[in-house]
Image 1 (cartoon, helix red, strand yellow):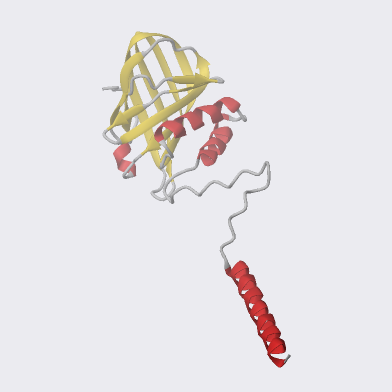
Image 2 (cartoon, rainbow, N blue to C red):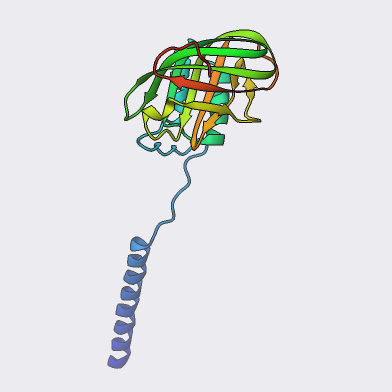
Length: 209
């Protein structure tokens, strides 16, 4: 009888120990991450310290162009999807005209996050099937700019980079690893695919070459 009672007591203690071990494993085990509530998008990571997010560029464009435009947002997102996040942008105004051959002149300010702001001027020719005149406010996204002084150079057009939506047009220029993406909205009409370049200078000049 005593042996049976002892066996029952030992069995009871072993059951309590096993239950406690299972509860400890459940408590200290890795809990799988839970998905966010339905309809809540995960937050986007912050951009690197020297780059601008697409939202920052769109906000700057809305203030500059004077109205909230869905077309601007789509053009900026197109540029970001193709070239990534810019580390600078230019806001300015320009005038241009063309009849087979054309000219373009503009001035504005280059903004960077941690290298200061710089006044810039630009001018350049265009050649090709291109007719019309244009006066426009212009935003230019700048990619892979190593320093502000590197903008003062000649940049050639990238074939097949034209994009137009909602009254905003986008093209792209490049030199070495630097890419400049002008986004324009304004009066006038420019038709055709032109070949040319834009030269950035630190002072105004009439010489487009």
